[in-house]
Length: 68
Image (cartoon, rainbow, N blue to C red; front, top):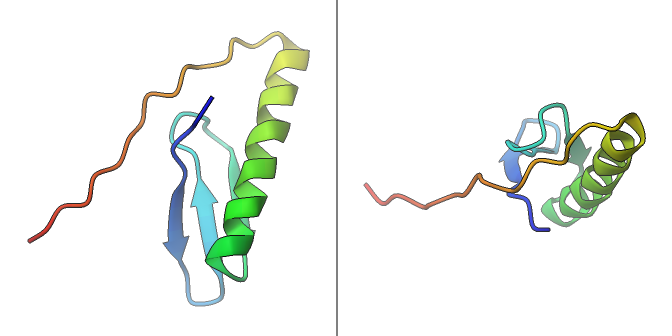
């Protein structure tokens, strides 16, 4: 499965979250690091959901770049 992860620059680092998986977040010092970390966070989040018997949501979120 491929989930959309939103990466944001903060004053100290980068943060990421997954709209389809509430509570699934990660941080990192670089975009590359936060990307690796959110990948691990997604895997961990899904494993926890499986163990708890919670249905895994299908990826639905998407992104679009809007020029103004």
